[in-house]
Amino acid sequence: MALLNKNRGSVFPCRFFLLFAPFLMHLSNQSTIAAENNPPKPMNVLFIAIDDLNHWVGHLGRNTQTKTPNIDRLAKRGVTFKHAYCAAPVCNPSRASLMSGMRPGTTGVYDNGQNWAPVISVKDTLTTQFLNAGYDVFGAGKIYHGSVHRDGEWTSYFEDRPIRQKKLLAHPSAKDDGVGGISFKPLVDDARLADDITIDHGITQLEARHDKPFFLALGLHKPHMSWDVPKKYYDLFPLDSIELPPTIEDDLSDVPPAGIAMANPKGDHRKILKSGRWKEAIQGYLAAIAYCDAQVGRLLDAFDRSPYASNTMIVLWGDHGWHLGEKEHWRKFALWEESTRTPFIWVVPGITSPDSTCNRTVDLMSVYPTICELAEVPIPAHVEGKSIKSLLLAPHAAWDHPAITTWHRNNHAIRTERWRYIHYADGSEELYDHEIDPYEWKNLANDPKLRATKEQLRLRLPERNVAELPRDRNSQE
Image 1 (cartoon, rainbow, N blue to C red):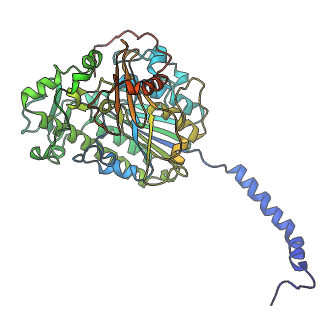
Image 2: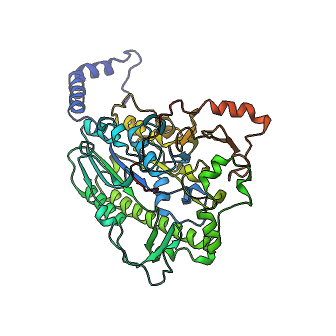
Image 3: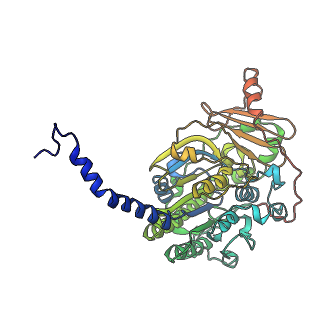
């Protein structure tokens, strides 16, 4: 039977509406009141920092022999940045910059052994913003260099230093402690490292009931040296299968003295070559990465079991990269690709799409403003980085902010999607075209045809370069 009569127009719907309008208005008011009384819950934050992990991660494709199934499965849940770079290629200034929102040239924190606390106020740090916003803020492991933490920035912080200082038993197959300063050996398979305990603490927090939104920061030490991890991780990489990284002879022949001084090829690299144990060292690094990945897997499994999985953003970042003989260099402490590129993954409910990749160049100064913006926490005026929320929503969106890395005063690398430009304090330069030279083998800084390119990149150099803070510790690690 038709509800409408052509001759009577829409009388029935009008009468229906008039009859039920008060009821519909009541439902609308109730919905509004319910929404006001039950606003959306603030988003939790799971913040995973990894020490000395370069881009030898499976989904980044730079190294085909690495085994990182758990970091890779996290990447498939959200957005991974293929070209993410540290603010400084060493632990202390990288972490101080990320957590404060201020670059090394602003604070004077350029190296390890420089005490950041006097120049970075408690009120300015990332975790303090979340405390002020009503969050519980928990920490464990290495967030700042050496697991240093201060009262007033955390609800609680689990101290793991006594665990890290505990003597671990070497596996009977271990030859020694490595080659010179490059330290590696297998441990007995039941060895419990500090990272095991850090992740235990993280799992406990995920299993606990939280009446307030939380910010949970967990810092993994491995694959920082020494690469002493249980032998089962070494066994994943038989020595006869190890591949050396791509290198060329006399790679440093076109590098200015300032760059060579940073690389120190007569140090670690010469010792490794003389020992004949280059593959063993790489095996140790790969084993330490696999161990780290297993800890990430334990954490993700607990996260998936928790009641917080649907309302928690995850950000995973490495504090800087690492060389294993590329450009005749070992460790970090340089401004090239290997020492500055890091894994960088975001999973944000309602924002990121699964299995997304962003090829824009970003740096870790983006972490502070992005987390705050996503959690609707105010971003302090002192923060120097740019939020990457637009790239999380649309990974192919336009982006005109290069990544900037600083290593000691007035030494900077500018990384765009095509170019790496390095400007040293003495005015010397390097320029690499990543479209044709991904391993940075040919320095184009003296090519007259690229003078305009250099000038454009030079405009991106940081304007602030305050004096370095004094060193008050001897550690280079």
